[in-house]
Length: 116
Image (tube, rainbow, N blue to C red):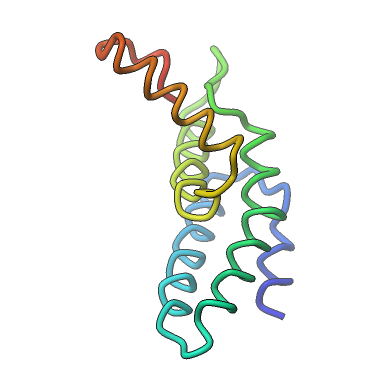
């Protein structure tokens, strides 16, 4: 029931709501890691949240800011990327894009355009 409640936030655009969601998701993730049936429960939680909530929202907002994007949209992207690092660490597309951007940044460390 809790996962269904969290998944009701699919498509949420508010950075303020995502900030609250991030706190809840991280706290639940941490708590589940201490439960005796933790590995199975944790894996199911990560898979549901990653596939149904974080990935679609990250895809919608993208990795790079639009030229006219406001600060709240940038804040939402930063929160989503932090959540992607925690919940999408085994997603090949996310790992590939993060690695590509990191390698680009290493080539020119002062170029902030390659970073999200």
